[in-house]
Picture 1: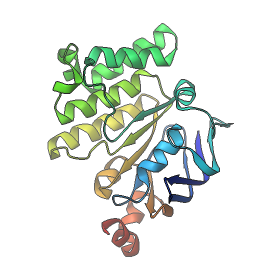
Picture 2: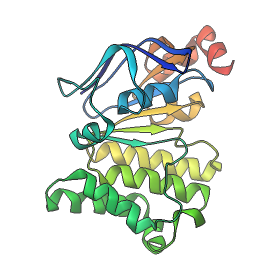
Picture 3: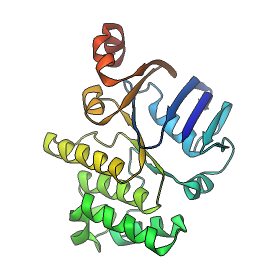
Picture 4: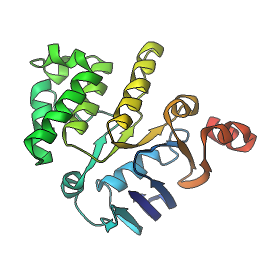
Length: 234
C-alpha cells in the first residue's frame, strides 16, 4: 500500500534521512522506532509531503506521490496526526472534525462510518464538541488530532509519537484505539520513541538511527538483538 524507497531529506543544511526504506501493507500496523532525533518525524513529514525530499521515491497504492503537495496526498487517503497535534487554538473540536470531513471529499455514507468510528474510539470528544482546542488537556488534544485525521477517511494513518507524555492508563487506552483503527480497515505507520509501547501494537517494526534503517522485523526480534536495543536506548 505505502512504499518508501531510498529517501533522502534535509532540514536546512543537515542531512537527516539517508536512504530510508519502509513499506506498510494493507491491514498492517508498522512501528518506526528510534531515539529522539533519529529521523522518525522527518520520515513521516516526507511521506506526507510536508518536507521536500532530495532523492528517493514515495509510492502509495502503486502511484508515485514523491512530489505531490500534502493536500493531494491527504485526498488520496493518507492521514497524519503530528507530534505537536497541529491544532488551531481558537477552533472548537467540532470545527476541527469538520475540516477533516471536508478534506475527505468522500461520499456521505463513508463519512458517517468514520464519524461512528471516532465516537467509538474517543467518546469523550462528544461532550467537548464546543470546546476550543486551546482549553483541551494534553490527552484530549492527541485524541482530537487522531480523530481529525480519521475524519479525512484515510486508507493509511501516520501517527507521530501518539503515546508520548501520556499516563500509563491513557497509553493503554490509546493502544487499544490503535488496534480498533486497524480493525476498521485502516493501516498505520506509528513513529514511537518507546520501543515497548510500539511493540504492543505493531505487527512489524523498523528501527531508525541517524537517518538510516538499521532493522526490520517482528517486535520480538527487536528485543532479541542487544545491538539494536542499545541503539534505541542511546
